[in-house]
Image (cartoon, rainbow, N blue to C red):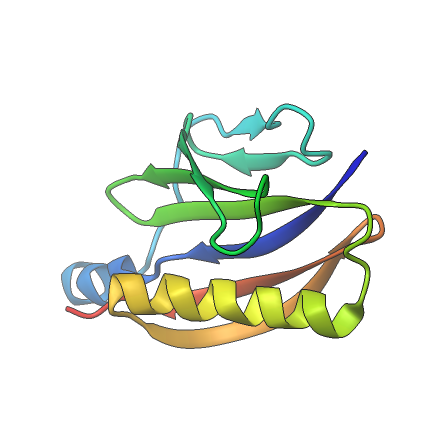
Length: 136
């Protein structure tokens, strides 16, 4: 049995500055949002389309993989990252460090700036939700 830790969720808010210059109000994504339920992950998330999924091995943790779901639209980029660990990863300090590393890695790889962050919990699983502003 594996535990899922929701490493990071963030929505790129670069569209706000562009749209604010073009029109007086920002309009949310239109159309039908769909439920995305990755196999054996134990959660679902709604997105305005079907994301692509990329799976990468986690360095220094044999057999552990990072799953990255991404979807880009004209208004925003939607990204969900999760990692499934063996049940023996339960130390809150270790989980916090993994979540911190996930956030820092996501920001560093995009060149963006952290705008906000909050701790989240899905059932008994710890996670983070954060927003960022990409570099222009």
